[in-house]
Image (tube, rainbow, N blue to C red; front, side, top):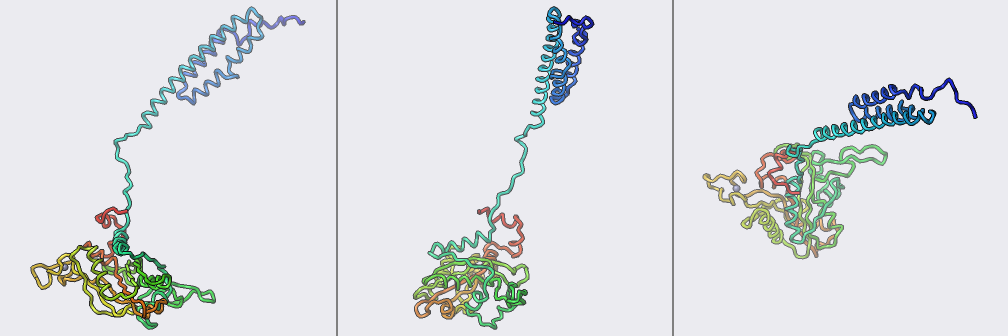
Length: 379
Ligand SMILES: [Zn+2]
């Protein structure tokens, strides 16, 4: 057993002197008080209560003291640590309260403020009107048929009895789609044999080839012509086309169907009239007019009651119609001895224009919601 080291008096250990302990405690209390936020307090906590803090180191020294000195030093250090922990807890809760109060203010939501409202979208009046027209026929048992917009020249012209020299086939009327020659070069002019369809009629030819007669179809769709965009023309517009092929169909069926359509769309006292015309794919062919739905013909010859909608003519031109040319039936594999058919088509833009007094077709394409909104928000 070794003798105690005379030169070392544990009671006099520097770190355990009362004034040193007091200083450590006061430094800790001052550091906590100085901590402006929870982060700074956390740093002060580590520095003054952590394993390497002066008080922790002093506490460790107690073990080296003789028993008689241990109690007093232990009490002193214990009291200092108690005071430090109490101050820490008090500062901690004060800072937390401060933070919570600040968050409540900073993150407050004023539920009475106006918010950014996304206006609800709606479909374009051209689309909804085209569907409304198609619905008239769907209700009569017709089927909606669609076809490609980039169409084979054969379907767009040949199958519909357009002769090779028909002016509609010219580049100045029809968009030809660029293709690739067998040598891998781009085609020129009308070489490709593919056009942007100039009417919805090729859907008729496709439908007749795909279906067995009888066929009753309605074909709404987008068509293209090389027109400049102006108040009454557009290079892209919409058509709706009707085709009925069955045994024993006559012009009377066509006329009755047209009357039913305008009555469904414009009112029960509406009617249509036919004027002779020529189209390659119908024979006989007719131009169809409908009674002016505004003046019902009363403006004709009455200068006191002029009508802007029909220019006081009493009738509004709708489109073309006729009995399907037997050549078209043959081209599409239908026996013209057994079946006959009628067809008609008209432009949706034009009908929408006079139905709603739209004066400039461009308004329909510019996407300005001030134009579309009055038509309602049908989705
Ligand atoms: Zn009129």
